[in-house]
Length: 176
Image (cartoon, rainbow, N blue to C red):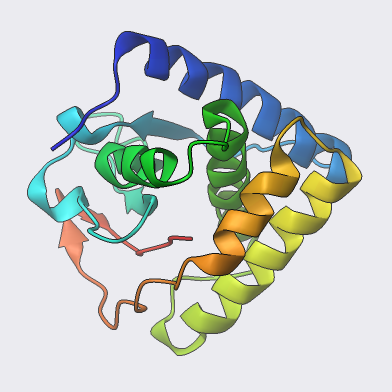
């Protein structure tokens, strides 16, 4: 199981900033929802999503303040495998795409434009993937065209057909 190195984690931090900027600029709306990002070595079993680059969870707060927030669970091993298999793909550009995709989900869920219902997960994934591609095409970063070419060749993982509770929080499996 490959995990991100400290250098990779710096790219995740930079990619978060870039993805937030692209979404804010492209939608004219800031991301107000609280969220955090975890990597594979921080994930519990329920947060892992084999075959996906990321999994999005909604966490109900624990403790006195009960802060509700979203959690993006990056799947280091899947991301590193895709990068290994596609050596011409830039890791920062790939991280920016993944985070742009997940942050669009967060923005849509927080604003009420989408929900965690099982009935429309497939449509939501298609909509968010298309929106992420449009925003990244309108506000391109170096290497994004190669990312689109690679993603077009990768078969998507099957949609999860269940909702569950993880650590007192609801979860949705959002992936690329």
